[in-house]
Length: 287
Image (cartoon, rainbow, N blue to C red; front, side, top):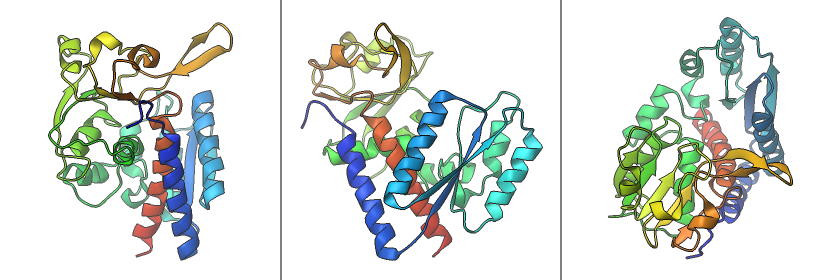
């Protein structure tokens, strides 16, 4: 196995598969992104989705809405997209302004178009191992494991972070009875006592806690596989800012068996998996 687990190779394979399916079946999938207000990181991610989508044959349309939009108006826009048969997928770009009720908005998106997989029906399908969408970031982690042939069966996997977006769904996915499952899972979080004790037990350590350079080499087991899900912007003397993960990559590189970089790791695959969900949505709506 390579020491540096690059996400670029994994993403390239996924994009090739998507493009082949689109060309073979002569389909025109469409994703609509709702972007509320201005956020540089969100705008960058959306522009990347537009660029990648255009390259492989998925139409990605971004609707920019004012930061002051009322809940009722946003729900009305979602109703409009739900009813539009030419729109196969709806994505709500976060973060949202504080005055909006995120849970109500998520519930309003038609489950068959909810490519973020936040709707309770999609979350329920994931937990029960039923057909449905898998959130893009957990799906990206599974693709990385599969691509590099990292065996999970019987392994002790420690996840640092319990979010609804990454930690919780990932724990359920790694418990499944399949090639990237059958693991023993420990989920740690901000209230975990003696976190270092738990992280050092991991054969595979997955970090999604949202704290830059949080995991250092004294917190990992010798020859552990470390997967960094975090993306954090920090100050840089030369460039002004730079992006780092939740893991101190340079610090952990020699001690670990393998580690993902940031940027160029899980995040690169996440974009591909989101677009793969658009294809799944198209197929669900055009059986």
